[in-house]
Length: 193
Image (cartoon, rainbow, N blue to C red):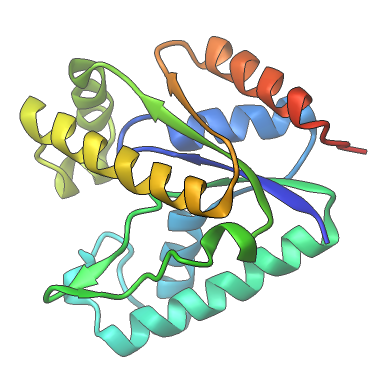
């Protein structure tokens, strides 16, 4: 089975942009977990991917996560190394946690977590430039900071529990961020070929 790294952070931070570019530069597969689940929601159930999670029935959400997990594991199994990007935040509906994260790291053979940060004004600018995200998110500077702190704590706890490294990287320039992540990957001794 292959291995993976996880690029995470709040919405608008640039996870997918960094992951895609890293994937291209290293010639390895990339999976955006959110996009995969949106695609499955549309294909399997005819759901509009722009629907808020709270509008999707719980049984369908759980089925989507199960199907998504199978596809991700298949890709990891077929490749030596994969780049994942995901919010890593537990989804909830009516206060009920529906995305269990306890085995996330071991399930996907994650060797390191890269948590992206950016100044809140840059995140708001990215969100405003994305039509779908602009409809979903109305983030104030305070909410961006709070969400980022909460997600950092969660990601740190998960990485610590799984005894894997977590790196906090300020993502202002994609090229610089990719170089930093690549250096960390080299330190892990990962063989891409």
